[in-house]
Image 1 (cartoon, rainbow, N blue to C red):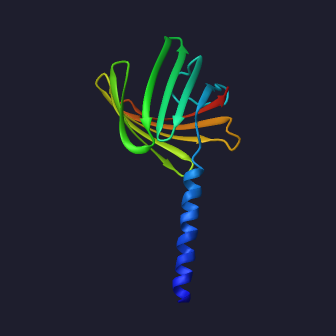
Image 2 (image 1 turned 45 degrees about the vertical axis):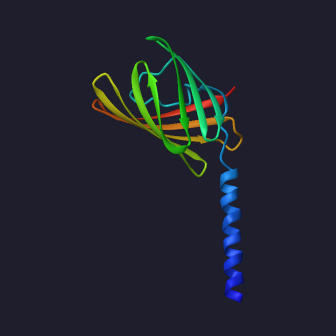
Image 3 (image 1 turned 45 degrees about the horizontal axis):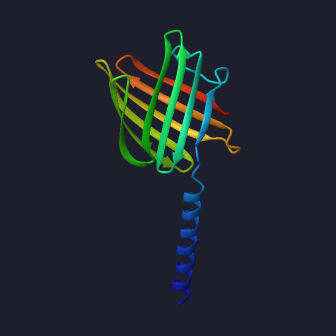
Length: 157
């Protein structure tokens, strides 16, 4: 009888922690501006500015990006789900397939696509600061041109 009671308490405790883990999923919604001085673009030329408007009602995630650089202005939108199901988006007539899922409080992206004849894979880790004011995107890109890493620091506006 004691073993059954202990097992019941153990299971109840696990359910409580599982519920807390689900409740602790960060909400990334907001307007975000890239802090160029704190970011590391790796081998890529930095934009002169970049903003993201994120709409997040888990599992739905929409990201609208505006970017300016020496090559001009560029804007796109992408829609994802954070439940591990594949999402397909088109950016500048190029299709990209992404799988997005939570790993604790970190949102993981794996995107595969093609720009022209060049296949690429991009893996992102998105983390939100404890105060909810800084979104850090750690990115690893692999393509026929090689591999590279970036660290993008976005501040909530």
